[in-house]
Amino acid sequence: MRGVWTTARVREAEDKVLARTPEGALMRRAAHGVALHTMRLLRSTTGAVAGRRVVLLVGAGNNGGDALWAGAFLRKRSVGVTAVLLAPERAHAEGLEALLWAGGRIGTAEDLDSAHVVVDGIVGLSARGSLRPDAAALVSRVRAPIVAVDLPSGVDPDTGAVDGPAVDAQVTVTFGALKPVHFLSPRCGEVHFVDLGLDLADPDFEVFDTEDVGRAWPLPGPSDDKFTQGVVGIAAGSTTYPGAAVLSVGAAVRATSGMTRYAGPAADEVRQRWPEVVATGSVEDAGRVQAWVVGPGLGTGKASRDVVASVLGAGVPTVVDADGITLLAEHPTLWDARDPEVPVLLTPHDREFARVAEPLGVDLGADRVAAARALAAKLNATVLLKGHATVIAAPDGRVAVNAARSHWLATAGSGDVLSGLSGALLAAGLEPRLAGACAAFVHVRAGELAASGAPTSASAIVDALPDAIRGVSRFRHA
Image 1: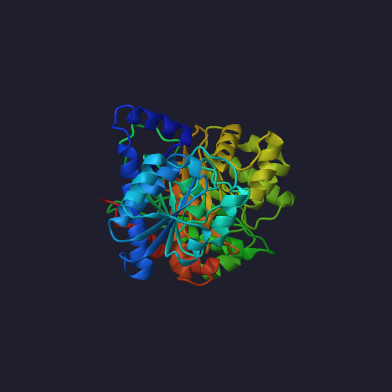
Image 2: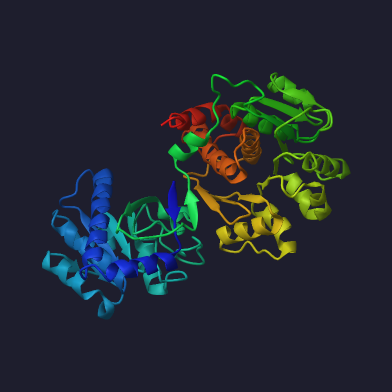
């Protein structure tokens, strides 16, 4: 599990280390990491390092200094290095001297045209807002892959938000600690970390790795049966949208759920696709479950409202998705059916989030982590805010983030799959934040496997779930 810290906390920790470290030592260590990963990118894209051309985009301050020192290290490996200085009078003096001493040179925008790799050292963690016009003009000229120093310039370090021109990096090399931008923005590309020995307390949020998900994922043991593995109920679908039920149920079945019950008007379609499922027409007839999923394809009429009330009143952990979220937004009194001590996991996309949050005074805005955390506290429920970076916020303030590495999940029915996965994990006994984080992680892996480099469908994502789970479960007993 990786911890992530806001920039203010990282800078505070860096100041303490700088006070006891020889001047320039941390910068040279950071720059060596930038040089190392620049050479790796050169080797992977051009097949060689020596004789290749790297252009540094150098701003004022320490971020530019990191880039200049990295250029000095690259010169020692026979890389041609040119620095384009955005503010020559404020360039980092020691870094520029080191580059020139090593045989690097100061160049112009035209040098970008022949670069094999460009190093972005324009701005650092203290900067806010998009690139200024002169920097934006340089970046727009770049055609080579970019290595960003600490973060892509123009991207907000704490939210990942972009409000104008910004760098789109293939590789980002960061130092000291991982920051929110590295998981909230796809512009970072592949992120590499250089340890500076910072002393940091509890992180602002966490990112689960394969090992974390594998160890948490419930797999049957020798004494398990269909009941001990967790029985999940799915209240989803309608005569108009039976596919939502089929997809959500399928995900629950494939998630190693011990038993899946279905309640709703799509019972025939569900039985036809998933004969192992116990399907009935209503929540009241479904039998006992350890968790419910309610909402996908349900509709928003009175009958659907009654279903949501029945599920919330059942006294077991519940995933509320799609139409279920819309109903909660339109009829807040539905919350009265819920025992406040029983966990609820909401899984909204941005528009659903806004429907629930805005009447409560919570604005989604640019800071998705803060918004999800605020709504979770207001509702006393765990909120899984879907997006490129899925944010899972518990009512007690703990947050996990799962960053997608592709856009294959942007397909109809994908959210229904995620809700079924989450419900199965709740039924197996995982607490909501962990269930949501593990479900989101495996959901992304299944999407990648199903796509295999081409557009895919939600049905294919369901079919890929066993392989995705198999990929993480090797860490179950590690």
